[in-house]
Image (tube, rainbow, N blue to C red; front, side):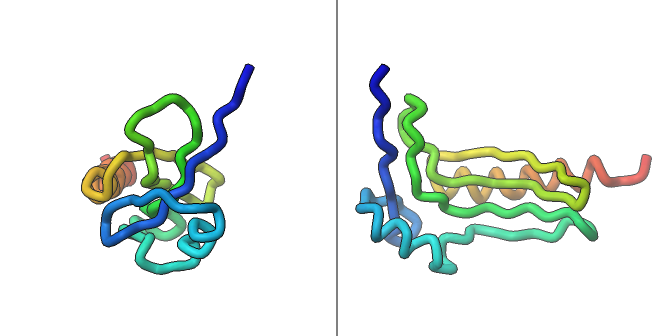
Amino acid sequence: MTTTPAAYYVLDGHEPKLADFEAWCGMLMRPERVIAQTIVAPGTAVSTVFIGIDHPLGRRPPRLFETMLFNDYGGFSQRRYNTWGEAEAGHLEVVAETLARLAPE
């Protein structure tokens, strides 16, 4: 079985552009890769960022943006997106779903 190496990307505005590994590493430290971060409740947060790496999973276009939900109980969930706009919308969706789950019945 042959494995395909990962492809690396950086942001040009909100658009991903192919880059080399060194440029990608530098991008990871830049604040503009953060799309949104929301504290939903004490101990529960949603973070959406540009990850800039195309894991060779056969998906096209590459999923370069990621939302993760974290909580103090060791739980998390993850969603990935193809575009900045999808990631913004996905972040809001995860926040709304989390608020709904946390709301008293």
